[in-house]
Length: 273
Image (cartoon, rainbow, N blue to C red):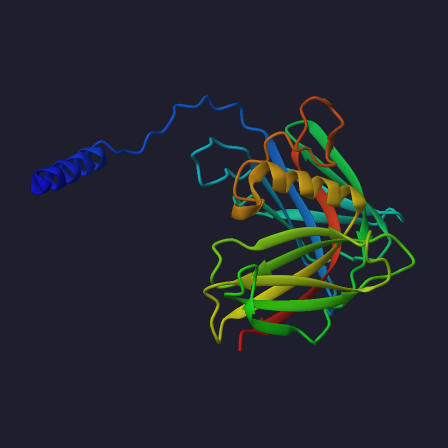
C-alpha cells in the first residue's frame, strides 16, 4: 500500500510538470512614443565637453530592444545664449556634442526638433560632493549578517537642500543598483550609503557613482523606480505614465518621455578584499 501511495504521488507530480508551459498574454501595443534620454553627466576631474543624448521610442511589453530615432536637430543653450549642437552618429539615435561646457549652477535649455515638432526642457547643473576615500568593508553585513557589505561616505553641504542619485555597478548584479536620496535628516552631516550582496568575493570591482540632482529630478526618479520595479533597475521597462520635464511646444498632448538632467558626478572604484 505504501509503495502504491508513493507511485501515485510521483505520477501526480509528473502530470503537473508535463502541464507546465510559459503563457504569453496577447497584449495590445500602443502607438510608439518618443523617449528623450538627455542626461548630461560631468564626471569630476574631466572637462565634461563630450556629451551624448539618445532618442528612441517605447515598444511592446515583451520586447527587449528600443527602436532608435534618427533625423532630429538637437541643441542645448546656456543663459548666455551659447549654443551647443548635438550631431547624430548616423543611424544610431545617439547625438554627440564634443564642445559642451558644463558650469555648476548654470541654467540650460534643451531643444529637440523632430518631424516638425519642438520639444524643450530647462534644468540647472547640480554640484555633488566627493566620495570619501575611507570605504569600509564588512564581511558579515546585510540584514541577515551573511553578505559582503561596503559602506562609503560623502559630505553634505549644510547651506542648502541637496538631492543625490546613487548608482552602483558590480559584477554580481545584472543591472546597476540605483537609489535617490535627500539630506532632509542629515543636513550638513557626513552622509553614508551601503551596498551588499551574498555572492561578492575578493577581487570583485565595485563602481560607485554619486550624482548631484535637482529636487524635480529626485521626485521624478522615485516615481520611475516605483513604476518600473527597483529590483530590475529603472531603465529595464517602459516608463509607463511617468512624465519628465520635457514639453512638446507644438502639440502639448504629444509629450515625450524621458528627462533633461545635468549633474556633476563623483566616481569611485572599490575592490572587494
